[in-house]
Each structure stands twice: as C-alpha cells, then as structure tokens.
Amino acid sequence: MSDRELKMDLDALKDELARLRGDFGDLARTLKDLTRDGVGAAREKLDEGAHGVLDELRSVLDRIRHGGKDAVESVEQRLEKNPLVVVLVAVGVGFLMGKLLKRR
Image (cartoon, rainbow, N blue to C red):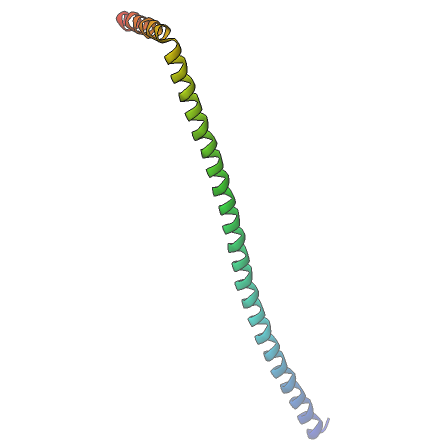
C-alpha cells in the first residue's frame, strides 16, 4: 500500500468518524426530545386520570350527601308522624342501658 492510498484511507476514516459524531449528536438530541415529550405525555395522562378520579369522587360524595339528607328527612318525617313511639323507644333503650350498666 502506498503512502497516497494510506492517506486516502485515513481521510476517509476521518470523514466517517466526523459523520458518526454528527449522527450520535442527532441521536442524543432525538432521545432527549423523545424523553421530554414522553414525560410530558405521561404527565398529561396522569393529570387526565387524576381529574377523572376527582370527578368520580365528587359524584360519589354528592350521592352520599343527598342520600344522607334524604335519610335524615325521612327520619324527621317519621318522628313528626309518631312522636309517642319515639318517646317510648327512647325510654325502652334507656331502661335497657340502665339494666346492663347496673350489672357491672
């Protein structure tokens, strides 16, 4: 192999190395962009999921709140219709509690 051929091969290798450096730089930038985009997309999905869960929780709490209000109103109506029964039940419960506590 002559000096001239060796120099040409060496120059070709240098060019290939320079091209590889550029390709690796592009690849690193692309990976960085993909990672940033991937994190952004994951964050958006988490935000959407969190909002969905919060909306569902609000809905459940509203149903519980309305159910509790309905139950209280129902009890109040029964108390208003039959106050004597309520008094008798309260006296009976008090009597039983007194007997149970007296045994101790």
